[in-house]
Image 1: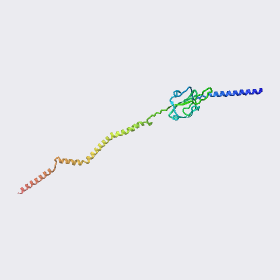
Image 2: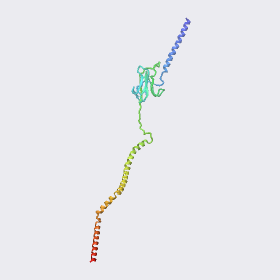
Image 3: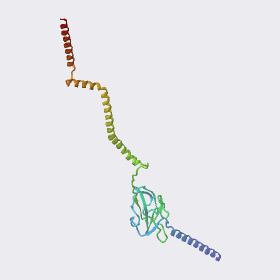
Image 4: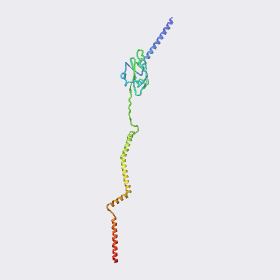
Length: 247
């Protein structure tokens, strides 16, 4: 009996030690279960300003998509995607008497999703992970600035201006030069034409001058009549002289 009693006592002590170690180990595991990617805050936060995060509360599925995260049921939340027009500034996950704040790019949380297994801080004497009481995502809308730059080709802007100006310049030159050139050409052509006209129209000019001279009273007919009269007079005089000699 004594031998059996001693063996039973030893077995009971060993079992007690094992049970104690298991409980202590479990308690230690729960105590170390705080998420190193999050910052724990006591109390409650219902806005981005309460959590000291920039921006406003985003909406799903327009701004982001998620899975799990059912209130009073799930313990974890997964943010899967975020709209390219949105910059997430933080995720607030509340449960029990405290809340965790996750900030992308900090404490090992990646800059971009997916962000998996987000949860509330541990709570209670056993450091349990509580069910989600509420959570929200904060963020800002990306502003796109459209900058219009000049073409990268050197002098393209100037070329454009020059191109734009060139037609004007050419047109202007055409307007200013062409009339002058045309005028000069016309003048030259006119001069040449005048010369040609003068050359080819010389007889016309002479005829015209002859006609004009005829109208000024210059007429050679009377000289012919005078000459004929003189000839006739001379012939008559000669006839009379010869007749007198014969007589």
